[in-house]
Image: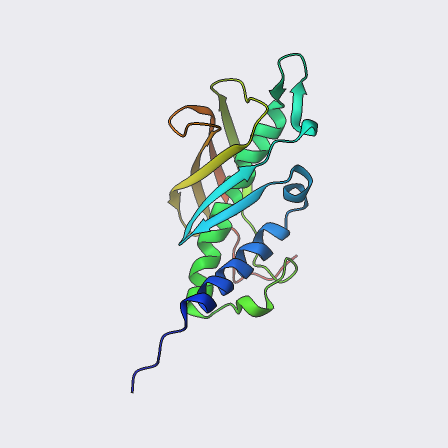
Length: 171
């Protein structure tokens, strides 16, 4: 007799718990107020507007460092999510017991280049990352950020990351 599939709501809850643990492991995410929305295996990052994110009050414009951190964090979370997704779906990691302390190690940034295409306005911003290449040791990611219109990017970035070795003990 074939195993009965899990109810859809249980699958969604398991995935949401895993994403919550992944995002909860990065304190800066909470500091700037970033959120992640999951649709299947696709993530969209949201940076809700807050006055503390303004770099130039005369324009006003989002701080360039906040924009860079938003893009880099989106890339790191996307890489972490892709790795975690496979582990959770295969049952190798139990999403029930997953916490920021029990997460697999996250990728480390090798380099990250940001293109500031226009001024980040004082409003919500959104970003999506696309993994161009991901191997056992190295990954390349492209991130795009927009505000009101997805076809009018205000920033984009490309980053290279060192992937964690899963079989090696923590130092």
